Amino acid sequence: MSASAQAPVRHDWTIEEIQALFELPFNDLLFQAQTVHRMYFNPNEVQVSTLLSIKTGACPEDCKYCPQSGHYNTGLEKEKLLEVEKVVKEARQAREKGASRFCMGAAWRNPREKDMPYVLEMVRQVKSLGMETCMTLGMLSPQQAGQLAEAGLDYYNHNLDTSENYYDKIITTRTYADRLDTLQNVRDAGMKVCCGGIMGMGETLKDRAGLLMQLANLPAHPESVPINMLVKVEGTPLELQGELDPFDFIRTIAVARIVMPKSHVRLSAGREDMNEQMQALCFLAGANSIFYGEKLLTTPNPEADQDRLLFQKLGIKPEQREQCHDEDVQEAQLHDAIVAEEQKRKMSEMFYDASESA
Image 1 (tube, rainbow, N blue to C red):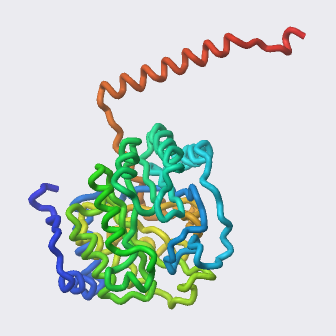
Image 2 (image 1 turned 180 degrees about the horizontal axis):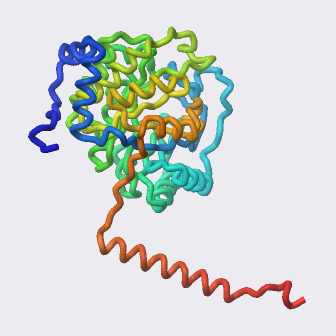
Image 3 (image 1 turned 120 degrees about the vertical axis):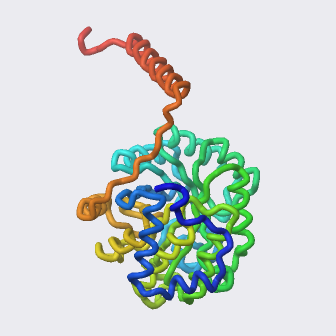
């Protein structure tokens, strides 16, 4: 479709405009969202990512939804930072199952300097597999953001969670401004932004509109916008929170698609509690990215085989990552492969089969 026919990318949405979208008749809202979606994306392709917790538990933040917070007793065992080799192994398996992006999350307020060399090596090695890389490590200083960018990190995830007005009802150990500062540090370092929020935490429709307005009015829209549905975990303050109406969640997906037309809108946490029909409506509303695998950090997620079956029913295919075809890059990769093969051959010549000389 020609650029002139595409929906404009705006950064000046008002809360009244976004609330008006939420209040449209359901069919009209989905029609508008699907129309916008088709202007920028193939409607039958979904970007597939896998998320791995590289350091679990004992987070000092008090996010009221999070089982990894050290403030709550959820029965989650504290774990050390995973070894680089284990992370790379998981990334290879994710690639074999069709994931094009590998996301790594650590339960930190912010990365410690002693952990940065390991984190940077994870990025380099996963990147070498030909996958897009994403991390969520808490707040970042400008220096840390620069180091991650230099290592080759493609995306950094740092969710706003909810509207600025409702934020202090969910977390008190870091401010909304802290989160916005990290997003700016990520942008300044040249990385792409993954940023969204969680629905079903007791927020109002105006809060949902406020979150989407904040995201849509950033100087540049997040390239990836995860829309999560609260997963209620025993031991957290939100464990008894009431159920979110599925239509309210689908409406949020649709409005996110309309106000951020070029972003990947990710159907994220909470899919374990969504039936196939609800997920199909989310895709119709403009969701075009998912996490798959058995677990999202510490919460359940539909298994990859179930997702592949649903994709078959809907005629959806995983979105393929665009590969670089620059001749210099290809030549360098070919040279490296030849060198590696030659080294392997020389190493094999240094040994003999001891069983034959017995």
